[in-house]
Image 1 (tube, rainbow, N blue to C red):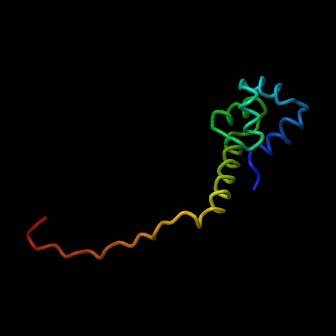
Image 2 (cartoon, one colour; image 1 turned 90 degrees about the vertical axis):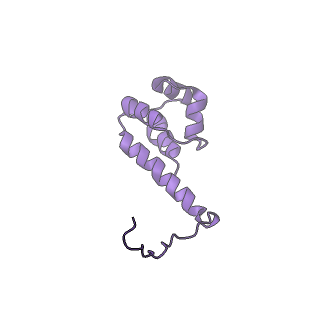
Image 3 (cartoon, rainbow, N blue to C red; image 1 turned 180 degrees about the horizontal axis):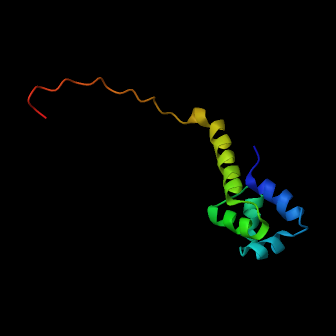
Length: 100
């Protein structure tokens, strides 16, 4: 599974012939913030996704689905490390008559 930054780097930045600095200016963010996203060191936030939608026309829904799919794939890789016992409800106890 690819990080959303991979998509943004190839389909937006490189496809439009932009440098990271130029793209950061278009989006109104710092170069380090955009670079971290493009290199998979930070997650795509809803705020960044709306900036990308406004500037480049890729829907926020599509962008956030990419982030969610990436997050799910990453946590599935580590699911065995997360120890949680399945919930088993206790059997219902009979209440004494006349009491609530």
